[in-house]
Image 1: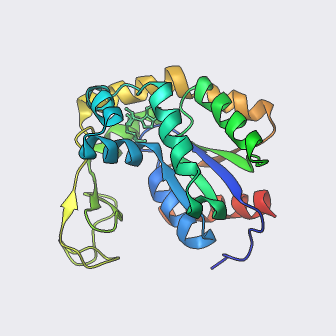
Image 2: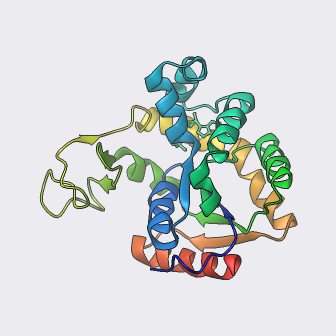
Image 3: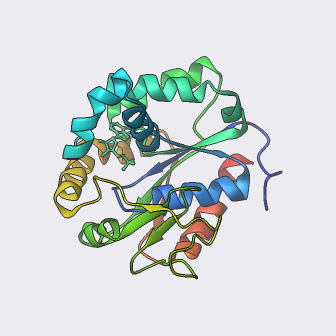
Amino acid sequence: MNTDVITTPAVLILLGPPGAGKGTQARMLEDAFGLVQLSTGDLLRAAVAAGTDAGKAAKAVMEAGGLVSDEIVIAILRDRLGEADCAKGVILDGFPRTTVQAEALDKLLSETGQKINAAVSLDVDDAAMVTRISGRYTCGNCGEGYHDTFKTPTKAGVCDKCGSTDFKRRADDNAETVGQRLAAYHEQTAPLIAYYSDKGVLKSVDAMGDIDAIAKALGAIVETATT
Ligand code: AMP
């Protein structure tokens, strides 16, 4: 679609509580703009699965719905940002989640001469998030997101995108843990809305509606912020 629009490595941040649709929208922006989705949640789940030291330290915290230490997350993010494909520009999904992480990101970007094009807040009602999260699952092969109520595959049990019949649900997508994750968001991540507003890069999107309408609103923000 619009892969020629972006001329310098863009840095976009998606802010919002768990269930706001950050991952879904990041993947759509990846396809539309040729950017790379960088999800610290995905990176941490991979570290847990691989049994690395960082993964071992993160596992219990993630299962309880808390935030993994800034030190571990910043190190993982720094390593991933340094990989060649990120030179195309990145959409940060789930990072930063604390002021310490936001300041570390500013420092990392200043070292490479990059800047944040936009931090977009996906605005949602908390009450709806538990339903959204407890019904969601992804294709085990390509990562396409689905939901028991809001987005089922066209052919039951077969991924629309890649045809795989392997689906998975996240261990922390249960009602109990979601409450903790929402609390962590409000206590530690929501203050970043003011942080990015003060920097003049904050944008907001009403993220309660239709996925495609939200993607359109986000796409317009990305085009403006990157040209
Ligand atoms: P997510 O996939 O973004 O919902 O993240 C899943 C879990 O990974 C979170 O509930 C946290 O335990 C952990 N996590 C992901 N990103 C971060 C971050 N930036 N800082 C701290 N913990 C994180």
